Length: 440
Image (cartoon, rainbow, N blue to C red; front, side, top):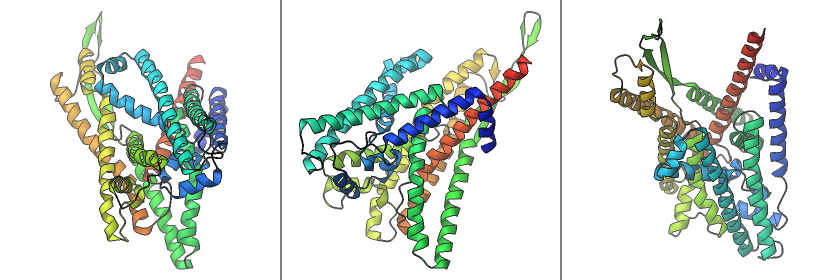
């Protein structure tokens, strides 16, 4: 990794992209520290302590607890992406746009931008009214205070969406993923320090050493599993028949279709986590907190990750049903996103047009059925791997009350984005190497 970065800085074009990305991330972190004037900082900290929003705060890089102009961060964009993915299947017009290629994707991206701004406006308005009703605004619930909060949060979210697109265009990697990465990484030192205080510092030397070894081993093993899952793939062999073109015999080559085991990447865990947190966040604005009493607060309590797998109190274990919902969402989004990004029918038709076939499988419908069958199996393996990685930290949190904001989901995002970014840098270095060789 360090060698790749060192080589990248030797190439002026890539060096400029890395510097642009670095400056953009500095802006993200600076904006996360700029509080909105209308909200009382003491009250907002008190409100956050009363509500279990650790995962949401991790995704925003601590901006939510600071109630900064980036408090909503890119979460409205993530939500709008989920909605657009669902609408693509439900609305034929959007499905046609997606099949139009680059122009269609640009139109869908434009619709997603407008939807992001609309969601940010609704969420910020709900927050302003909720804080005003609870007395958390300096000067009370006035039109001016509400306007300041709505404009600040909406503009902050729209700016981060724009900045993410600029990083994708002029920087390195996927801009939205890079912003999400820096948000999570910014919270890791505090989380590890809390683990140190809770399990090492306050224990005897022997217990502290054992706890440190277990923590390092669990984190290391999780990272290794993530890397294996990200790189694993199934190669489907493809044979191209020989044919005559002019006076030459072409074809007869052997290739393969690489099917990644984790085709959807970090998308399923992000979508599932956002779905689980969204009702808790919205309800908290209206002073409805997760609790064991009444119907809706009990539902929120069940959706809260902090209540899952609580082996210390068996009466609490029943609320782990929320974990089953989370697992079901991860599996669903793994299949859903894969079905959007990889179409067996389209791949089969393209192979048939080019004279390609899978050895032992007839072209056409049998090929489509074979690809679908293989894809369903490997997606299940990928979804199972994602679930295991996401549940391991939840298990330790429930069993040992490890008070941390990050989990398997955060580690999947961090490792996945880092791997993808490094692959992009390496591919750009490789392209420039070949260009230089050809020029010589």
